[in-house]
Image (cartoon, rainbow, N blue to C red; front, side):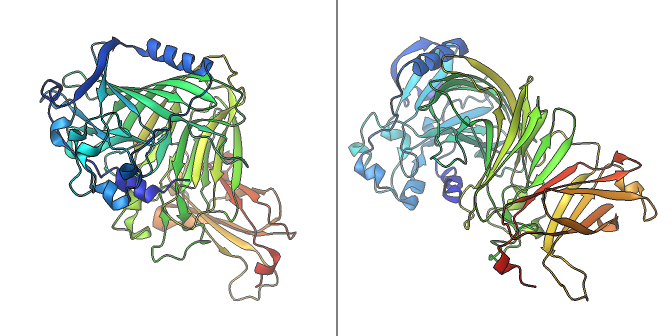
Length: 524
């Protein structure tokens, strides 16, 4: 888990605009001589890394930098006159993050122009340290950088993407709001042993063409288990698109390999009140895992904040897409006018080719604090790449309010839960109520007289008091049922439901994992 509130605020800590490269070359210092570069050569670097024993990329920071607290780190500003690509006909600008706080591993930065990569040297003159307590003249010339951020011409102040920490990166859609993050890879996430976090150790920022809305960034990844070469083609917009191609080279066998990982936070929502002790009605970056399976089925899995770590694997073959989505975009449901959870971007993963058999895997970790990421979703291939092999993979990431793809069927728009039973009648045993709302598709065309049924299955327990009826407020339908646990176990119970008419589905499939309380907590 990461301290995400501070991480998000750190993205706003550096400066804004700057001069063009011709101007900045006198300010930005080159390191060494420019070298020929293309994606093939980056793959060669990654392959060579994987063939050699892993060496840590930890740097030795000066005590003054290592000891920076949050306020001191945030006060460090990137100087305007040291940014890249500020010519009037270029639509992107790039600037760098300082080392310190959570970001202690130096990352090498290259300016890539006309097939030639020029490494950029760290220079204290790039940063304004006035309020940090650091003394520029006392800092070493080889300190290095922590990451970088990108600005787009539509907003000269707010950045559209940031790469900072391990292999993490974030982006915004049209609402200019950071939220969940993506990673290069996830390794052994949610297992009993510590998770491995690969690092992007070098970035090659390719000068965009004049007037182009797309910028290309190359990244070199390394970790004890694997090395890799990445190419990002980044296009901001209503939904920001990142087209990613990666070449991966394992050093050793990896038990749980996570491709295209999405990392988010869910503390509590309308379906899960376990940690609902805050004045705000809901606190989450995303409220569900959306999947478009290879067989065409659409699935919605609401997220939870479980009492213990929960791991689920949803088997599939050649998935069409998946992602962590913030469907609920109503400010009134959050009442947060500081971090605006109603504006958090959804993240949709779209494979560019067949990925074969595997599973979308979901890890939910207990949290009592909204500053910690506790949700991870990724693709786990059934056939893992072996050490010495090259594994090529491509996919697109879409950052925006909602995914670009949606089913023709009705979608789940709300999941609510609470105590079961019949109002006004004594409850003789414990049960748990589920109220699931669907809207869209053809549901608005069906009135009370239609024979629409809720098809419900449970892995354990008894389903009772089922109903399905129109809900005019959303021009959709509400399905309700109670689940009566028939044992004292607290193992998760998997629920599955969809609405059907004349044998045909009208909605996507709703999946849920319910954790029954301990027997002592089932008092009526």
